[in-house]
Length: 172
Length: 172
DNA sequence: CTTATAATGTCAATAAAACTGACATAAACT
DNA sequence: AGTTTATGTCAGTTTTATTGACATTATAAG
Image (cartoon, rainbow over all chains, first blue to last red):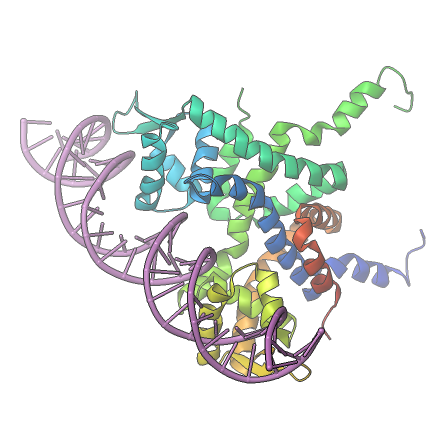
């Protein structure tokens, strides 16, 4: 076990086994199917209302960082302002999101969830967290650490900075 | 370190730290951003052609399991046959996919990639594998094992059976 | 102070990818 | 002979995105 030499090559190739095309393909397919599971529960809830996945994403990140500006949200979601506007318009009209004029820069609009908005956010994220919690619990802490490490590496460097600033500050 | 007693409670709560709402929320956001990175490269390639992500998925799974029937593909992709038909029609008309009458059951159509289809499949999956490989390499084998464990748990049980049969058989 | 730039919002047209519902055909099963 | 299954297609609709053009208001720069 501890002896080096003749086994070192085999050990190294064993260690590198996770980089074979076949292993990578399996990883790709796992991402595809897991993402479906990941979005399934909120999608089900949203389907019963007049909302879709786009509304969920907006609500999530507004709830995540209260007072977010429209531009910041656009950066996070990676969509055009016209696309976001349709969704945001609905949420504001329906009284789930509030749109306050910026204090420092009055061109900006700071976005907040109303009570109704917070309520829907909780409902959606509870469903998603529940599945995530079940997956985490079955996989165990070490697996979760690995899961997070790989996902962090998979994030495109262009949006990594945005994510960094977002993921880091835990809301009170 | 080894002494039990007063520390056992702290240790357990430390072990369970990965199940806090905050940790789960971070996991949710990581999935969201990582999936974007995961699809970014093929999307970029497809954007230059007349194809989209739907074509990529069809091509991937046809290449993955040559001779797949239409019904099997529908089950994997989780879309309606009308939705798949639009995509498949294009791919067949453009000579990327071939549609052979089933040998045992002549109602079925077995799907195959043509040379042109294989060529595009390779181009797309090379791009995706490259990013996956980079992420895997930076994260290391232990992290990758954990990554896979968590994703497997996240897959909805309804489609888990389909995935099982698909992920298991490595093509020659 | 005037002009340029930035942040937001909106109108219009379009595209991709899904959906439902209805219907047709051919083959297999009973 | 009648029913079910696998596939394909027509028509209409929905969700989510796109591009392009333009208006409003506010800050920044000269």
